[in-house]
Amino acid sequence: MQITSALVVFAVIWFLTLFCVLPLRMKSQGDMGQVEPGTPASAPADPQMGRKFRITTIVAFLIWVPVCLAIVYGWLSVDTINLYDWANPSD
Image (cartoon, rainbow, N blue to C red; front, top):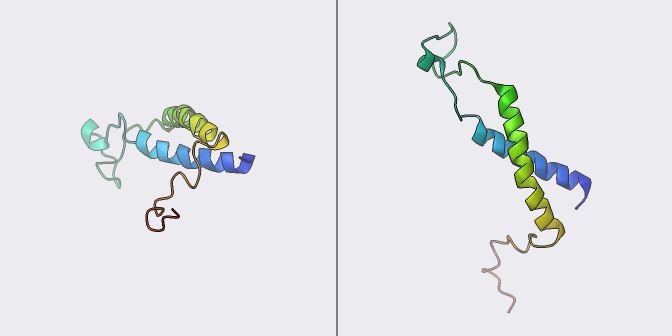
């Protein structure tokens, strides 16, 4: 696996993890009773983005390492995840 491939895999995993982490422990402005004019009540009162980015980076790294190892050692390949192999069996 080349370094650019590893970085792309990390970026994909990082963004997927971010979208899972964003709603965790979120208090909306409506929940807090402090809705700012011009914003919806569902907007976060205190988004804590720095904390969520740190959590996302740690979790994504813990997912990324085994995925990269599986690709490097050949446990995971394009042939492994081929969903259309059943349509054209070579046997």
